[in-house]
Image (tube, rainbow, N blue to C red; front, side, top):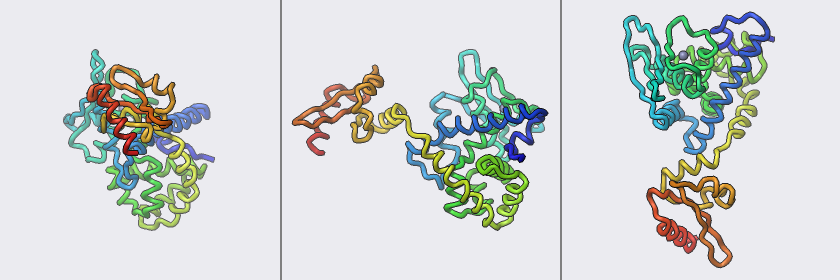
Length: 307
Ligand SMILES: [Zn+2]
């Protein structure tokens, strides 16, 4: 049965079964890399799956890594995208600003992929005819996963019953990109024939969603299980909460009751302690750059008397 992801099928000229296997593994691998970062990101911020776009995650990574993002223009739009890592490790990423917006979005996420996947090199240039090396395939796959996460497609297509073009518009992607993504996901998850899934997508595009709902019904449990599998990392939750406010307790982060965890997170910037009175303990952590030890203690005490 030929159910290899179309992304790989189209973009890479491969010859042997071994190569095909290798590329299929690549698809699974990149997909997991994205989900392991993106799903906890969505959960932690309680982002709505129905109004998801790639932008929140993209902006977060860009800001966190101090990446410069710029538009560029070359004659004949010869270069879709460009990532440059300078000798000091500074990263800048640019995209052809006269391309359609959906193309720009795909390029931005593709370039982010080169960076987050740790591809070797200091310059990545997207030319029309260099898109079939393994790193390019990986970056394309990364981009599709960030733009169109499986759980978001399930929510929009299966729960919300959105039309094909509505889904593409809301995710800021082209119809072509959405078709390929659906083909990849459904063939991969259901072990279905690419030709059959392709026909179903075609029917969906033309306004009839009955068959695609059947396919999503079959893929439903595995997409949901996958979403549940990638949990929020306590350290990241701590960092996120301490950015929102300067003081948190084990009410919000139960891991604070664990001494090993407290030892692990205590640093020059983060303090941890416990307030104890009459058999009851409140474990807490605070941002040392914003609160003194005494102020944090007072907050814990207040919390104790209010709870
Ligand atoms: Zn590239």
